[in-house]
Image (cartoon, rainbow, N blue to C red; front, side, top):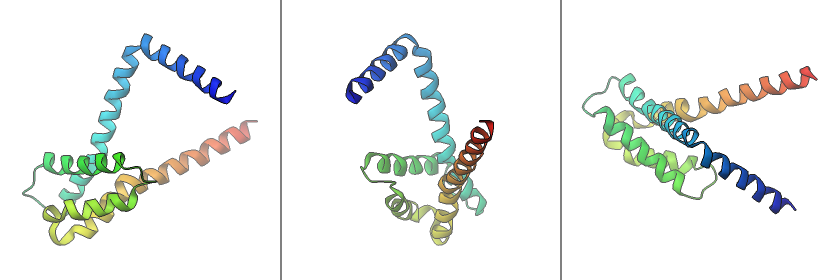
Length: 132
């Protein structure tokens, strides 16, 4: 029964997307913008350390390589491999400030999002609980 229900939801979603191609385009565009903003965090960290010599696109694309590599691996969370790749790939870019750069970049790019999401979850839970 659950399989049939999930297949029905899948069919309805597929039909909706077939009829609303603009939605797909907007979702792809927004997702691309979000990912680019996330990858740009590493560039901002690079600038915050007063570094120069590596172009913005090199830093952003290196971060994109890390993200795509981790996304393709079937690992839960992928945090360890992501940080390990950061340390290997960005060693020539950040040099002696590699570890602080990783902590700051990961803190801004991942952990801050986690905290913000947790805050919104708590607020939403309180709102809907008190609303009843």
